[in-house]
Length: 473
Image 1 (tube, rainbow, N blue to C red):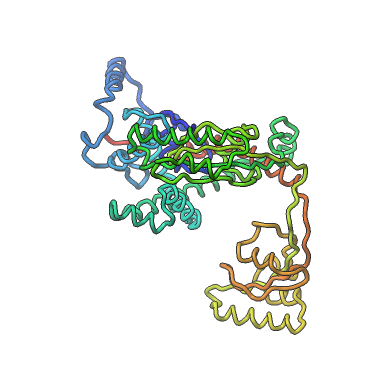
Image 2 (cartoon, helix red, strand yellow):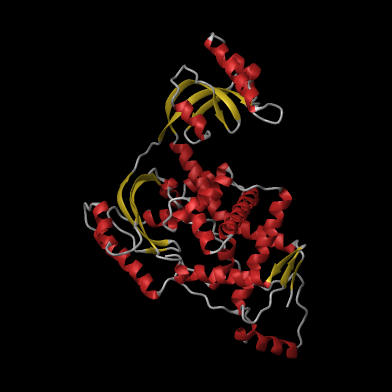
């Protein structure tokens, strides 16, 4: 179960809670000011201590606050209404995680600090011109829709805007900001975390490296969705969801259980359809971080305790596990010719050019020679279009699909991707053992996850230290 503590409230505001998780970072509670506090007299200290104890008076609530600026961050302002909304959101997420947080002056300081850090990062995003991945935003919206029992983003938009016009646009804008901040953080942290080949060698020689085995896990993963947003659920509704989870867990513990029947029997009168089932085999590296930490601790046949999340209650069973000393992956030795579509070359002109090259190939022209002369890919044109050995998920979807469907020694018909028009040729195919490469990549990832939180905290402190920040009122 994931818990919140008061020191985690800044993280709760800065990072969206997702099933895949993110790099965890807890910020220490601190006063939101850039000027050092002046030395206090004993009388001033006594007055400050007395004021600090009056949380019921000092904490900000809609009842005792008129909207206005509560903090200046460089050239931007944070409003009291922003702070109140962020505090409510943080308390709702903490409640969903099973550890409620009271409205207090310390909570207010924590959340305000998070808003200041968020504003600083958004300002930097604008300065560097960082654009978030649209696909990642849509994926997150699809996850939210699924968690709400909806089958599309359009259905999510209709529900949100029906409840409050403009709600979907606000949510999407929030997710775009989150994605941009995450991309910025990844860029900043990766530039600070240096991992050498010697570091990887030392890690692989340690006992910790044993977990980087080639194990594959067959999992049963079922979610009991909530009937409403967790913060609005009654105690009876929460208990009902938990009872369903416990019934399901008991059924899944039986050997050779039929998963579909166990889910149907556990559904009972619960009004929201249970989600999930047998997820098949997965590599350890392919499992979401939060789930992997649970799954890798289970013995085959064991079932996890109910895992409470803001979206629902998860039950996970490790159905089977298999290990292998080798990891064989298919690879294709590929060449291609690219004709770009850009401001200098329209799509129609590019299509005409690629069709002319295709006609030359059909008349016996040499693929490598045409690629060297006409391809717009500067990285491969000088090598006759040679992309060397290419594995799965290394190329964009349309390219990979065409590559897999082209026989060795043959070339494809012209096809289009986001980069322009292509023709590819498959020179060869092989099964390559990438076990050593896999282990080294996993070791690099493990070292990165160990070093990244401190690098992130150092960067945020530097970002704040270099900013003008003034807290008002």
